[in-house]
Amino acid sequence: MTTTVITGIGELVTNDPARTEQGGLLGLVHDAAVVVEGSRIAWVGPAAEAPAADVHVDAGGRAVIPGFVDSHSHLVFAGDRSGEFEARMTGEPYSAGGIRTTVAATRAASDEQLTSHVARLVAEMRAQGTTTVEIKSGYGLSVHDEARSLAVARQFTDETTFLGAHVVPSGITPEDYVDLVTGPMLAAAAPHARWIDVFCEDGAFDVDQARTILAAGSDSGLRGRLHANQLTYGGGVRLACELSLVAVDHCTFLSDLDVESLSDSGTIATLLPGVEFSTRQPYPDARRLLDAGVRVALASDCNPGSCFTSSMALCIALAVREMRMSPAEALHAATATGAGALGRDDVGVLAPGKAADLVLLDAPSHVHLAYRPGVPLVAGVWQAGRPVV
Image 1 (spheres, one colour):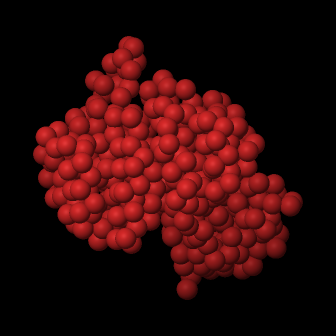
Image 2 (cartoon, rainbow, N blue to C red):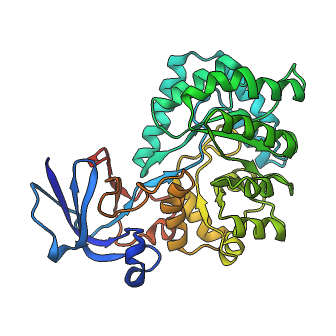
Image 3 (tube, one colour):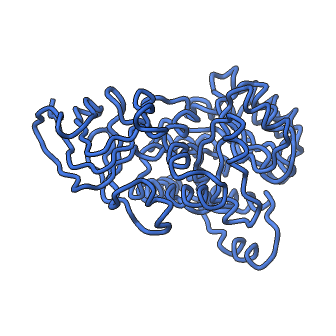
């Protein structure tokens, strides 16, 4: 098997817990090298100690980081909601109702159109350093359209999430729709999904409905996730903690009890600052969560309504500027803890045996991700051991 050594790495972010004593949270190694064998990392350490390899690549003093792990996205959709964004920017409040606009467009699109659209967005993400992405359904809201949305998503990632419980579509009562989601829709969707999710929020699904849907998903072999506390205070975050879900997403409006529950349960709080940027809502208080011992992840929530960005670098910059995270905390949240939010330990870390998913930055340090917001710093991307950008 061919081996490749990347030398000349000015700063290497490993996220390796074994290196935190000397390298801090990010397990930094300076003047570093990485050896890749097949799809995995074979060796990491100082460049002066690097073993011989078949192929040599010189990073030229640039920084290398793990590929971003985007644990929350909604890429299977059709249509455009730029008019809704423009209206918000002129003073109209955001609500969950716009989802139904995308549902109509998605139902009308062909499988080929949906697949082409997802392929374009995944390529856009990859070019910006994202090497692992979760993709949700949720814009079909019928048995046929939810199943085909997940079948499309599965072509691009194993991290697929059934979100039939996004909103209640027109023409059906909430009670009948929950029965549909937990019955025929779940049966059709489960073969294409790893996760099940619920939008637990005013205007969507309440705590009791969310509990019922997550229980049905668990019985079908799907692990639970939850959208919660995005638009107002509510019981969604505490439900996620009660059920020991691996992650709960948004977490914008949190009581002291919510924060305490997150800390005690170990459930990861996935924050989505691109949403607040795009809706002018208050940003989540990441500092409050981190100081309470809560694990925090960052994700894009790329979707056509409340946040149409695929840039994890933008999310990092917003987290540093608006949510009081340090550059190191934000990068760790977008890589290692993002992997944790997907129940993964093979990505988001550069250490022997882990996936060879890494990003070469046209910068001397990871700090430039926040220091130079909006600047395209990704000079190269390796995914599963081969260069893809």
